[in-house]
Image 1 (tube, rainbow, N blue to C red):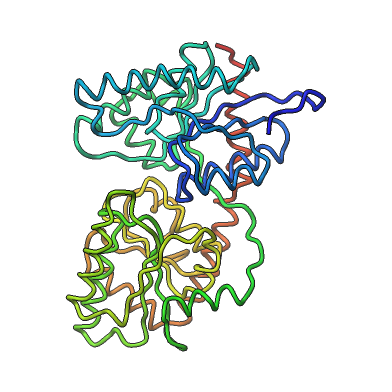
Image 2: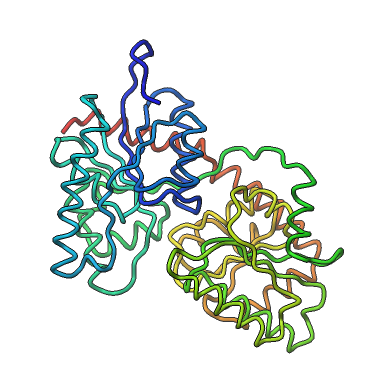
Length: 400
């Protein structure tokens, strides 16, 4: 779908995104561009590298979306051969975006995540203002950790970070970014009603027994997302005789080529004698029944989360959340008020926090209710879109 000739002329924004899945930054993009389309001031034109669930959702919402080269940055780029390949991809991206734009005036380019360089290259070649929306905190290797903030400084007119911790990481490496940086929290649209049958179906899928509390960790299976730490914490609860009445569901898939991680996690569960207490559920396109079926949500990331979409998704459903006390999760969850923190990478501390929450129904109700109120107050899609529209307005008013 393209902006119709007879329609009111909107200001076009070219969005460049790294994937077509439906995990954290993908959902952020979906909520943002569909919200912009609904509000009617900006016309989003989205480019992604492949077909996938995100493309289907965008098209279903009437968003203009194209599959193009994006010049994705990978660690292999930091070699002479990798750099040459990336340079060729950037040139190809410029050609692709010229075809997509087809002579239309583009107000600005919005690169959604650090992993894409196509938008920066096209904006520079065509004299268009460029916004880099940063969803990452990269701590290692050191070369990569320093290179990305330098790229952002070199090739952006404005930088939007998804948390105060993300902004702090960028500015610590490139202090000059402070003057063009702003924090805009991610948000969720109003939650639609979910049929009780869908909620019950998910509980049945996990194998959780009636009366058991279902503890859910949802997201990409990844070495730093903390799935292994949760299994270790459950093993400690079992050793203490505190595991009764709990069932754990790990929801999500690995990235292509990393399927061995799922096998390793399942082996960890088996070796700990926890097979009856754990379920592994593949990626689900609609996460809402998952959270409505859950009694406790856990975000035990072993490296700092730049933000933590799963935390606000759980909060939106009124589920009490336990999070590792670092990264962007500190912006989201207030300890003891809208959720609970535990010491990062400490399986014993996670086990203690799980036991505390599992054995205190009043605390679960209190944290679930207050977390839901905080999500609605601080992390709504509407507030995110309004903030970004103000950023766009300022950028366009400044000219180039």
